[in-house]
Image 1 (cartoon, rainbow, N blue to C red):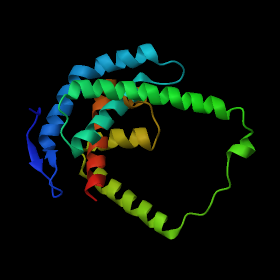
Image 2 (image 1 turned 90 degrees about the horizontal axis):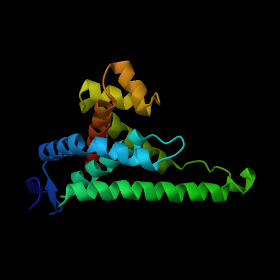
Image 3 (image 1 turned 30 degrees about the vertical axis):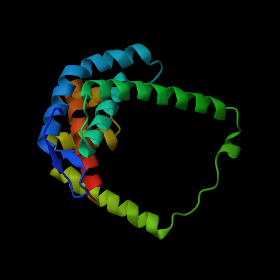
Length: 185
């Protein structure tokens, strides 16, 4: 039995109700964020921030929950975390491979974007702006400080007087809302 009630969408696929998804995400975040932060902290080296990976885990879970029910969300959360580390390892190996290729050979000349692609991008930006306008002010502010101003979670927390887990919560909430808005288009 799913952890939340389902409704049918126009495609006939069962979809979780928004408020139930938020409650589930909130409960999972409170129960698992610190554990995931420790998990990533033990496995990451270099410039990678464990908090960024925790944020990505919850963003991916929120995206999945907006589309379909997840039968075992705790196990699904752990699988996302493992996949993120796997993707990171693969990305680092690819970077190492390309370090041996001269830069001029690795970069192809840019091609001007066609009009259709530009219009699609403009529509996506409009939908993102509309979704941002629907968010609570604090959540929107955290999202913009992270994505536009490129501040770290720690810097945002210090600036707004909130903890890093609270910043992570606001980011996961913003991304889930934007993802759901883009999925409805």
